[in-house]
Length: 578
Ligand code: PEP
Ligand code: MG
Image 1: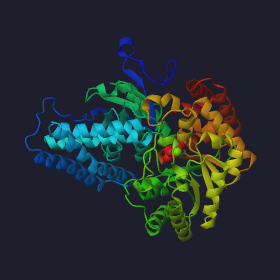
Image 2 (image 1 turned 180 degrees about the vertical axis):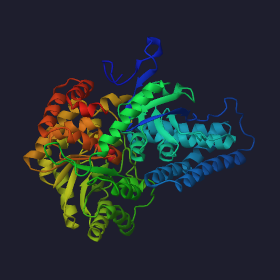
Image 3 (image 1 turned 120 degrees about the horizontal axis):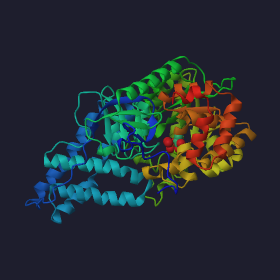
Image 4 (image 1 turned 120 degrees about the vertical axis):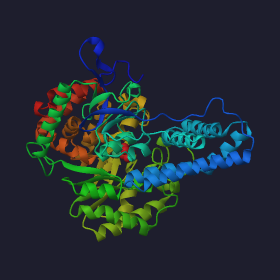
């Protein structure tokens, strides 16, 4: 249990047994919008038959195993050609797992030990999975992908249909225990009206990708996988509410609220500001060229976080300066005259890059990741800064560069010097380590701006692995301790007169965005689909009201209390639509 008190954010709220009509359950809304449709359950993993006999011809069997892994890699790569950008990188990265020679070697040992073909594949996968789980952090997160590859290979060697999203033709709500990133990335947006998962968290890849794809999504919904296929559900990706077999009146109410929301959102455009004119830049989080092109066409003020490591997730060799320049040029081009904040490679832990691997670590999330990697591989940072400088000169975007995982003023100074030596005008740092937040005055004094990474800041403040869905209550950015740390960082930024933004997922929560602005944040960067509702929230409150909401949140004892109290105190014109 993550908390000693029951959380108002989980569990069944009302049900048929209470005679209160259709059952409504509470999950966590991670991608806005409402959806109604029949449930399509994602097929569970295929397992080897319990009575599979040992093989007669080990060489032939190993050939079949190799062919099965190869077929998985080929099918993932083939799917990669049909999707965009981030999705493509994720699929290619998963295909690389299927091509790992170590897996075939491990399967050969399993065959020698008397396993059948499917059992040998599953055994090899589990052997790797145990090692990855023991390593924790990034590696533990890859276990879902590894098992996905294993299950597909088992299906291939048994000649049965692959696990995953089944074929369907009517607009439906896709439900799963959790979706492998490869699965989420390749969903057909025209047919998938909503996503519900039983596991996952606010900052899981499923949540990030669903928001980027504009599909309403709810995660952490208890009992989701036991919903009968074909059951009709209504979900609200803003509030996290899921209603099972809702009566049509409720669906209608939900739709009407969504229509009022669309109308209210459509009335506003342009730069973000509070009702009394305090400017708060509304920016997009992107992961590559396609995201940049899509976000560039929207009404927003630029990019607040370009996660450059997403471009290279499947690269086996470090990209050259020329290769990088081409990508950065394409990312900057849609933002002529607008700001683009580029984060240098945040490799390691949950985002490993083959070419930047320094070997296994006991605790990768606390290890040589982000800027720390540059101490051993300054060549990677130099090549990236050189490419960014060339691309920035060639395009009209207002390019600013920031470093991930900065902990001290010395690191900030070192990074700023390198950025300036490369002729880039503005250097900044992510504030996502509590140490840097507490000493923001010193850290930000060395650079031009800061950007709060509340995903990692929550992880490190609460000592809770962000990949662990079971810890999502602790990882909640509404945790008063996290808000205190953000508040202290904002005070530091104010002292040295540096702007400080937020680029973690919290920036896209309209109520939390008000709190963040009240704490002193001057820009908010989020999945582009969340910009309109945050713009609306700001437009309905003054700066002083935001400060009051921040005070209310910080005076609360728990995350649930903080959110509830802010919701209560915020403008009803906003909360009626949430
Ligand atoms: C963060 O940590 O909040 C952040 C924005 O970076 P990432 O999610 O890529 O670690
Ligand atoms: Mg981070």
